[in-house]
Image (cartoon, rainbow, N blue to C red):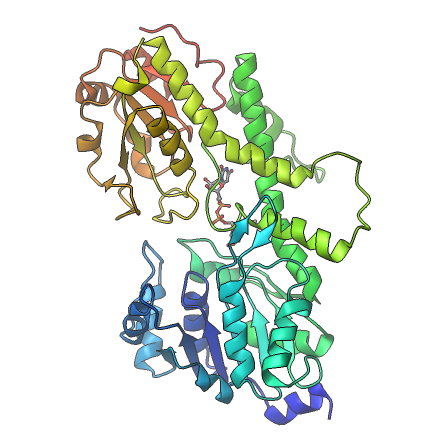
Length: 475
Ligand code: SAJ
């Protein structure tokens, strides 16, 4: 019997499992459970010391995700009350399911050696392989190295179940494309890349996602093409950010304002011309752009097997982009040191207030925040550093204050690292009074303030891309 026949005998997908109750798995499970197309969704979460607490919270209809996620709490309450969603650590329930998705973190152990840490994903796959039955659909939503779905994922599932992918069960990659703060909207409205290991698997996976898409549509392709699509879209975004960051560094060196240049370049529109210039800044953080380039690099190394034709001795453009973006917190540090030199302040006697610890504006997400390397450099230099972020309730080893004015009292330097709305209305006179300094320093890493207003108030100003202001006369 072919896989198609086994799936036809099983009938439409009714019972689903989502492994990994995090930023990707929780909203996906809630939307699938809320769909009239499906009967029940299990959210699988290991009952570990660090994250076992999520199980009870979810079964009370509460979201364990920090930060604003519009509509998520209401939806969880609804599907729990309707008995359509259950969170559980009991992986044996997989035996009764038609489809299982895996949304598990895939960080890197070593970016230099392109060595990802797939241990959590492999553990999830082992659990699926142990209990899955013929005709089941398995979908990887995590961002993975190209070749993973047809590679170790397939092997682990086949050796655990004794079944054969493409004959006894369907297997696909349908990468997540969510951003914190708009998880539900992104899943509903973004087009969904669905890549099966074969057309039958693609068709079965399409049946899983179509019912929860409102504006988005399914874009079918092979599983490897889907893996490259996801890693490439983040790599290209990172490259675009590196391009404008490099331009910002050039503009500083040439004494001009990168935002004038950006407005100019951006004005060439129409006739299919797009000059999509993104925004320069203090760095690139998050769980995605900071690693997906390395998944792509690893993929071409593994799948390309030496057949890549590329200029000899030249580094990968994408990895170079990573290095430029990783340099931006270092540049912020150098701007800070320059400014302290201008006022003759020894860094060992200086107090720096960092505004923003989250990697993204108006969010509480601190994964791979570019604020951390900057803080580390300052501390190495002997500076005293205090951090403000109204969204972030805590961070291991870094006290984070919610009181802005309290944070600014008696400091020498204010460094803006996140684009939180609160930092757009900073009042130069009030802040200067709080610092009690004649010439406080302000380093703007997110183009949040008007340099002239602060310079006129006696501040020493530094800004990413502001070569027109960074050498200003001190008032
Ligand atoms: N950043 C800049 N300049 C910009 C845009 C962003 O410096 O013009 C910085 C941000 O401050 C942040 C980092 O880059 O530190 C990442 O920002 P982001 O807006 O890319 O946020 P992510 O990483 O949460 O979201 C990305 C998105 N990918 C793409 O748009 C191609 C999102 O759609 C993905 O779902 C997400 O990665 C993911 O999960 O892969």
